[in-house]
Image 1 (tube, helix red, strand yellow):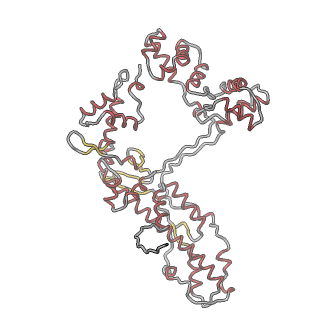
Image 2: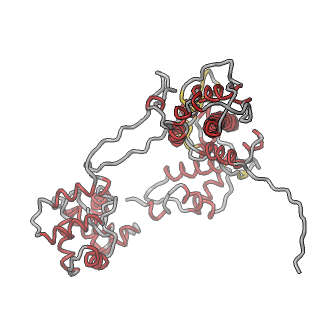
Length: 483
């Protein structure tokens, strides 16, 4: 038998407007500009520019669709209100930059793609029609680094199924050899070893080049593991000869696909969201003007409501039209308020971060960075941790010492031998400096680095040193060894 029960629960739900505000806060400057352009295109009641003051400003808020009831349709041209939702082009142009703003955009030069660059070279080679088709298909399988990382037998199957070309792997090898003679040297290799060997074959013959080829062709494993003593013993050479051969190998390009000057490569542009300057010994924070554009509600759409409100008779078609206008005005007002809230939230949060790390921003010394987590800032400004996380996400701040991701200023804390809390950033900086200053012939192991840090007042375990070293993208001691 079914039983009916009543229960009372208290739930907290975010409104669609709150969710949209959180998304706006998370957007970096370039994404915000794109979002504003999209909103301008979708909502004709939203305009760019400084809003003109009007004593009828409150009319929109006081508007009630139930005011007055009937009016002849010909008295208000509804078609004029709804005829076109498109925003004129001049309204989409950004006007919120001053003449003093620095233009940090990097122009992207045009050119042919890497694939086109290789295909153009193939067109001049002596290949029959089928081999040319195979060559073009192989070129299409070359990645951005210049490698063919697929197995040739898989490409044989693809040629049969997709191109109706039936070939043996041996023929594919011959066509691949033609591609490997193209520029840049090393292109079309299947692994790093083959790539380096292809480049050495293009160099003038000499003792060091011959030795370098011998190392790559027959002792590649010892070379990449930097077992130099084993190489000296097997090749029966002295250290000086080995050093010259290794220097030849180090001059080679492990990613030939990135070396082509004919390749069109887009350059990512970093536009800082904040700027911190030092004025007379004090820090000064400013928000990028692109984060605070001038937006206003269309006067034309407000006047539509005013006209409707002042009429005595209204029909259903006019009511439907004016509800559309009101919906657009509501959306425009909310979006403007959300942009203002975003601006205020960003400034409050970044100001707190700046003051928390004041000593660093005044000196630029990374060892002055204090331990700081999201909760520290959230507690100080009275906001949720998730809000601070959104503020710091994918945003940059320009400082006198460079432009940095805001999240780089957050770090956990550790105790030094004096019992003081120090930032893990400070420890990583000391670790990095110690590795840079080490004797490369006898690089410091993780155990030695742990002892060195302990002597400097940072008692951390060897496994912690290994973790920090990996986070800094620094190899183990054996791979840092040099002759």
